[in-house]
Image (cartoon, rainbow, N blue to C red):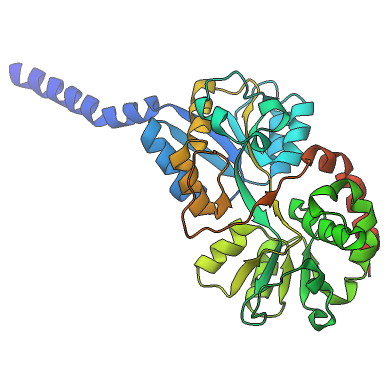
Length: 341
């Protein structure tokens, strides 16, 4: 009797001990983050945040519009706590009431973020500023283009790829065409963009492809089939350069544009206190330095120091609300006047 009783106690105790790691795992707090499928997030940035703050980040990488659709579908019972999206889509999310303002929340590092990276009175924040201009094939183009005007040179006939206007980075060639057509500074050209379509039409002989598939376009450039690619941003071009691909980013005298990498709280999302910790950590000066080196982008916290190896120029920050309000009209015009053959 005594021996049997002891075995049962020991077996029960052993089962409890064996089960305890699973119990501990189940008790680890977690948040669901939606964002871009980008190298460096799940293998570098998120593990750092998890180790520092002791919670698990469940991440689904997809584009901003798909993220927005999920937020709409789950409006009554949100599953996401934080969303990472382009500013033009965050503007729509704000108007539809599916994100909550960051202002007033427990995010101390927000105070040190530069004003242009706190759009709409800190409705959300930009966690980095990737740079977009001209990606060039370094084996074919030995000297970086000094002006966007060089893209129109006849020597680049059938040697240029443009990103479709359906992708945010396509604003860069449109602005380049506008500044060349009007003589106005590139920073003032967004509201004059309709005046750039004529100049952009003149580029058609040089355009080999208008792409909705950036990875495929990147392969074409790296293989040497095209010389110039307008305009993947520094997260792609400088990352591939670091991997010894024959590409680099030019900084034309007319200007280089900051792409909008935003982060926001989902309205009514679970575990909001973890969401605030997550966003505060993204904006921490030390984490911002890591982000700058990992994503080849400018930090947005004024106290952050980018790695010496990252030498980006001053960037043009656009009025993304104006872009969002006019984007569909520009897409229609682009596809009618530039993409149609």
